[in-house]
Length: 492
Image (cartoon, rainbow, N blue to C red):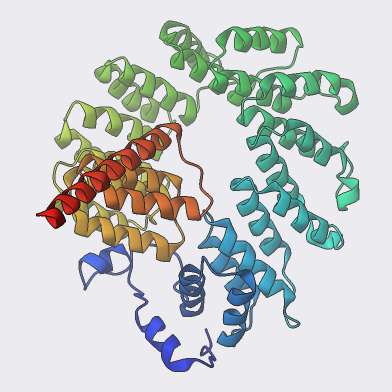
């Protein structure tokens, strides 16, 4: 990046000097490289700090400060700054509007998609509609990703009618008309993903002739998966029979979805019958996804030797395992503390490489199995060696572990790194810190995180809301007692 041109140079240089380009491991061990894959940008970090230190200031004042930096926005920089504020919509929107006003920069489709996603995620639909009105004037900036993001965020907020309305206005957005079957499947997929399966199936049957869905197994699969994810095996079985009656041949995904639903409901016998029958059917043998599902179900029922047998059999039959196969075994072996076998499997994953290389899920299981804070660094170093980037899930897990162990120095380092890396702190992070500090008697710290969380527009979970009310009561009681003590002392 070019040199940052600034007017208040001495002050800004001091701020920039405080920015630490090293990752989480760099905070703990000076010779280690950064764990995260996020490209370090001094300009983006500087703007992030500027927005953070002025978060309570009026928008006009923040915009003046941004003008004084002399920074010229471009797509790479704007996307970087927005992605660092995925869980903090206010500074993201202020920066986006400021960048959009400059004469030398026009936001791209990717930038608009990012701010729409941030506002939708935080349920700021009034602001989202303002951005949508702006982008609708330039139809070339709207693509299928924009459409999918809008549908997803409205459905996630259970605004089903609005999501359907957006679908029906595709042509107004400059996209293919609503007769596009792929776009219709996207709508059904998000409806099912957020538990509006009944509405999705109603739309499916209403449009069956229009889209010629009689023999389209892909769309049947979307609805079947919706009922299965919802845990409604009665409706899933009904739809399975409807698929067979429609003479629409189930594909590998249909089997995978139905077998997974049966195992999740504890109907392992039914699942194994279908699974074993597939090996005998030359036209559709189980794939790695189905094998993984059966392995996980057997492990859950504490039938680990049988699970290991399926693991060996699938390899012999030419169905190669992937990271998820190993992760299912590692998860359950960690629970029964068979750590020697766990690390034997991890080493096998590292040797095999490719799709078997350990991923964030693998390291989550390994981290959860640890007993001391000193062990965390070894797992994170191993994670870095294998090219696995840090994620918000891993950060939050490390926060939870350090909180449990009372390792406050580690907590601060993880928190700072999350902030720099744009992977939080999110709602989960604040919930961990509020509850964790309360449990170790640091109520003032817990309340400080509560205030910071609400200042970012995040909504408390019900359990956290109850805890905050209780802590407020305790603090008020302490103040009352202290004031009473002070009065008595003054009267002596």
